[in-house]
Every structure is written in structure tokens, then in C-alpha cells.
Length: 199
Image (cartoon, rainbow, N blue to C red; front, side, top):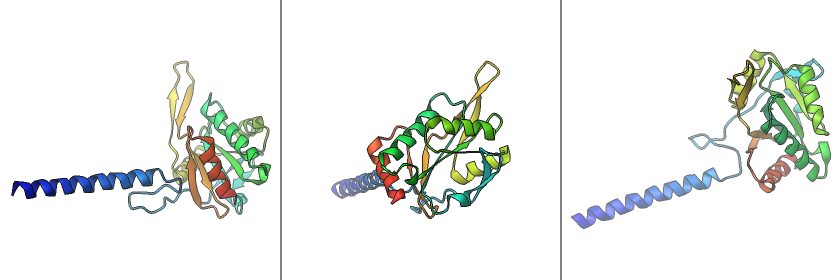
């Protein structure tokens, strides 16, 4: 009787370990993120923001173009400029310049980042970057669509910084969410993802 109980317990342990291994394998997959049911997450969708020229920018302008979208703010001291500079560098490495994929920067700080600010910021990177902003309501709506977190954090000097999602979201030519690039991800897998959406 005791022997049978031990066998059953060891079988349960083996099943649990197998399930953990399967979860780890799925987590390491470079494809689209999935929810608890295993279905692909639906991120993105049609939106209208404001371009650097002060005119409405519809996401329809990205139709047929693979694109990488990054949410940040122009006062960001490190993550935002290094991420955008890296995307430009990786795009240049692909050998097709701006034709490879579009880089879209969406400000999550509409209080300080108007069209002129996002336009000047986008121009700093020496290669076309689409800078977008909008009203607080517009920005909040787009953040929800793309699963982006941001929160103002007072800096103690009467000003503030913004904590935010530092992940780049990748979309293929059809506008379908493909995958992400993490801030600390190595260049080789990031470049492979960018080549995939640009094929």
C-alpha cells in the first residue's frame, strides 16, 4: 500500500516537472506573446494621434509597412534614446535603410511633449523616426490598445519623470502583432525578429 502511494506521488511530481518544462519552453519562444489560454494576444488596432506637423496621424498610414512601435517620452534620460538609437542602428544593419521597417515613437507624456517636441526628438536620431503625441485622452486610449503601462513619478524638485513599459512592439505588413524586443535583449535575436516582419 505504502509502495503504491509512493509511486503515485512520484508520478505526480514527474507530471508537475513536465508541465513546468513546457511552460519554460513556451516562455522562451520568440513568437507572439500568448495569454493563459495559449491564444495570441491582440495588441494594436486602428488609432489616430497627432504627428510632428501638428496634423492628425492615422494608423492607416502604416498599412502595408512593417513597423516597430516604442512608447516613451522626450525627457527620458536613458532607456528611450538608447532604444530608438538601437532601432535605427539595427535597421541600418539590414542594408535597406528606412525601407526595411518604420520606427514609431509615441509619447506617453502629452503634457510636455507636443508636436514640436516629438518632432525635434525624432530628428535627433539621424534616420526617419515617426514621432507621435496627442491629447491625454488619445494617448491613454492608445496605451490601452497596445498594453502599455506608464506612471508619473515626482522627482522631488517640482518636476517629474515617467516610469513606463520599455518594450518595443513589432507589427508585420498586415498590421498584425508579431513579437517584442526587450530592452536588454541581445542584438542577434532582435535583428532576426526585425528581418521576419520586414520579409
